[in-house]
Length: 337
Ligand code: HEM
Image (tube, rainbow, N blue to C red; front, side, top):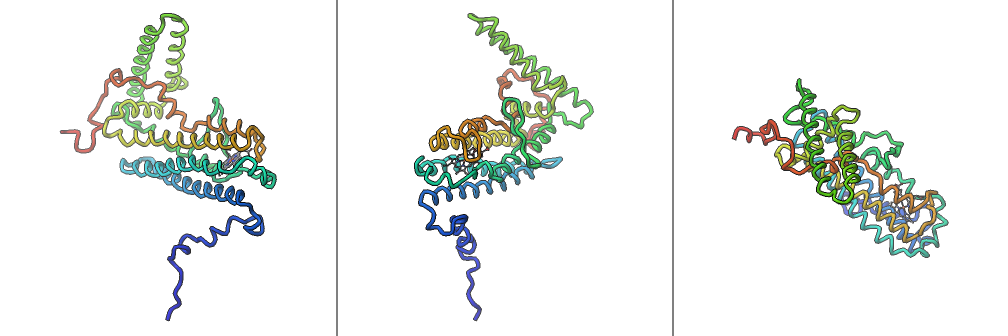
């Protein structure tokens, strides 16, 4: 008779024996670890497992979009992967609450033993960041040491291929059509700004109209850096502006999901900072950073800077330039209805 094996059983499948023996690690036995420290280790390990999932989902999303032509049917797949990463960040943001059941005194009782060990050294954290893209704060780039192709990079390329007023990048007069659209948009943007300035300018007219002038300058620099139209940003603006068009519904959903992803990550970062402030006040971190001040700064990082930036220059639907070649944006089969 063949010997029954445990293959396929719950503990084997999940490798529970190995998993549950990983808490004593650097101390001989689990008995050497206090209940508080066991809690501390388990919370960290669970985070690292969730990080692993986020990395896997974001990698899938990136690879789906990393094509010279992305089929319409592929976009929902990328969105689906990102949605799972978003929910994981949300769950992780709640998980700090479990950490907070450790009292500051309870933490101090074993903090010295950590030496310089810190979440700072989490390779998976740096990997999640690298797959998302370059981080910016106060106009400066935060260098990531990993040379990883990013979602930000592939989406910028994808956006640069957006049909604008029905024109595609390879079409013969595409440059002209894009330029005309941008100029018309900026003109309307300027006029709306002037109108708003007139309505608000009773008390401090000069100041208010200077502000609107500055806003318009920024809009122009956003769409035409160095005087030349940025096709990727213009594509993004086009999708955000004509978001109800059937052909743009998934692209718009993808952009919304990316903003949601970054928002979820930022909220997770700031809830970590609040937990840390509660635990160690304004002490320096075990990793040697300024602690809470450093963490609060990371909550100001932005990756998808264009996706955030475009919001500043959107105008109301009724004022948009007239849509040309609308049949281009209908669902297949709908164009001749
Ligand atoms: C008592 C609990 C905790 C305290 C007091 C704490 C404190 C800190 C501090 C002060 C930093 C800044 C770097 C440094 O100087 O060390 C940091 C960074 C970090 N921590 Fe925590 N932390 C705690 C729990 C956790 C947990 C459970 C995780 C989950 C993995 C985590 C993940 C991270 C990560 C990824 C960073 C790097 C952030 C970045 O550089 O963007 N921390 N932590």
